[in-house]
Amino acid sequence: MAEQIDFTACVVSGGVELLERINSAREEYSPLCGGYFDYLSGKYGKPTFRQSACGFILLDGLLQKNGTDRSSLDLVRNSDGRPCVINRRDVDFSISHSEGAALACLAVGENAGVGADIQRVRNYSREHLERLARSFMDETELSGFLESGDRERYFYTLWTRREAFYKRCGSYHGFGGSFSTGIITACGRLYYYSISQPGED
Image (cartoon, rainbow, N blue to C red; front, top):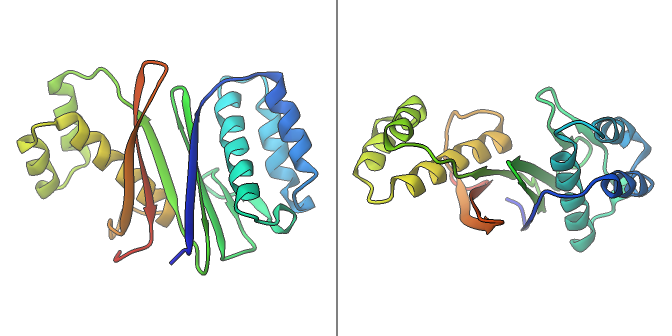
C-alpha cells in the first residue's frame, strides 16, 4: 500500500504561459520523458491543450511538494494514452479533467498505486440519469440508486469511483478497494471526484 497520497485540483485556464511552464519543467525530468513532453507541447493550439497542461502542472507541483526526484522518473504514455511512471514502483500518479477542472493525485510508497477521476455535474433529466445508471450499475448498485434520496450524488460518486478504480487497475473487474471522494465547486460548476487506492480489492 502507498505510504502517502496527495492530490490537488484547479480550474483549467491559461495559454502560452502553460507551454512555457511545460518546456521549463522538461529540463527537470529524465531525458526518457522527451516523448511525453513532445506530446504535451504538440497539443498547443488544440482544444485539449489547456486541460492536459494544467493536469501536468498540478502533477509537477505535487512531485516537488512531496520531495520526489523528478530527474529519476521515466514518464511515458501507456497503451491507453495515459501518462505513467515505468521505472519506479514507489511512485504512481493519476490525472483527470472534466469540462473546466483538472485533478492530479500522487502516491508515494512501496508498491504505490492510485487512480483519480473528476466529473462535472451535467443538467441531466431524472429519466436520462436513470438510463445512464442502468447502463453501468449492477443490481445492488442500481437498487441503491433508485432508493436514494439524492440520486445525483449517488450516481456521480459511483461513476467517479468506477473510473478511478479503472485508472488504477486497468480493469473494472474486482471493483473495490479504498476510496476518497468529494465535491468541488468552481466558477458556478459542481464537480464530483474520487481517488482509488489499494485496499481490500
